[in-house]
Image (cartoon, rainbow, N blue to C red; front, top):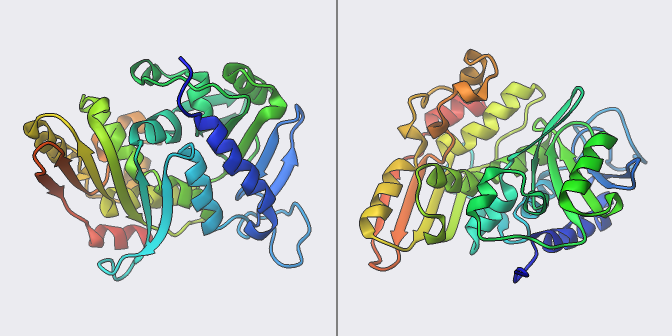
Length: 332
């Protein structure tokens, strides 16, 4: 069945617009060995006024606006990401707001960093709509969507571009020519990288709903927000902050169909405080687990507070709360 819309085609339009605006956004552009189009959003591009090319440091590359636009690419063009000021968060008021009228496809079929890519010493998690073409994850058996496109867009949490073997694999799995593949890469330590990871605040709620076996076809709309996490040069600290922004400061509102009792149950299970690991900064939990994500309770990866509205009855159920003390401990 031909899809009504293509995640990759919508994302490709956003990708080419990002290429066009690369200079003002302090992004590095390059062509890879197989002709793939590369955008460096935070690792090596010096950028800045008077800089003319690839530099040795990543601090000046990319930025908030680049990260915001990359997050919308990760959503396959089916979501909007905005930077707003939240008066209720007096110490960390700058907040990323995410909304989608197709949250399941935007978040689970596209934004979720579920594609593990490794070649030699190179390892990165792949996010973005290329996943919907490759369909390598078991999750796609449950999603009533199959993309068709001549271009593919992949976003990597990485300080380096992918090696040729990874590019060849991704292009082959997506059924596109390598020169029709666009790859954006940025480490979590960069500002753009931090922004695009925190912008997963809606996605982690969708993922937890799926893990709770809530029927995905009943999730009709969604919006979420989380504070902008200040980046840090240390990888574990930077990763910890992006997770803590969601775990301690994230809020989500889902609109669902079906029985009211199911909406209430979903709201009660969504918040991160339901996890046995809740309370400590994520970086400390990660170090204690010796870097093993699978040793960390999966229930932790979700927003701090949840609202779920049952559309048939109009009732909204609330659960969880923001934890400003824990945010301070992580961000300061």
